[in-house]
Length: 165
Image (tube, rainbow, N blue to C red):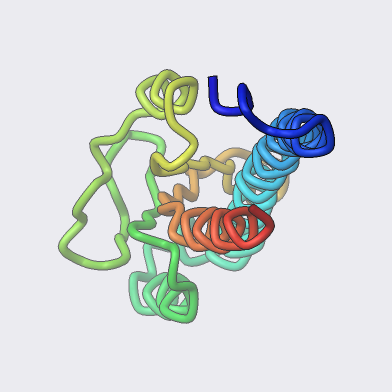
């Protein structure tokens, strides 16, 4: 035992230190977990809002098959660092326009995304919002985003947590 030959004062200090560490560590981990879940939920909400607004802005372009206007609308996503892919899906299942045009990860299905999210908070997020024109469904606006903001937040939390100990 480490404290076998130590004075009573050192033993009490050691017990207090271990007790404080045992209480602080779960608290820090809990706060980090809550921060991660909150950041993920915020990312989902933000991507859904983007999909809703951009879907509304592209409804006429989709209805009139105007790819020039749709490209202008969808290219506004270039300012969003965490958007990996986005597309306007027509009712027949074909993509009217995609961003970026190479269409990298559109194969991520909603079911796969939901299943993977149970195991990892750092998977891609896929949101799908309907595009309505005069109350009629003309297509869907889909955005796939990565979790780089969440990952960076976690690194910051870990550094802060290690600084406490």
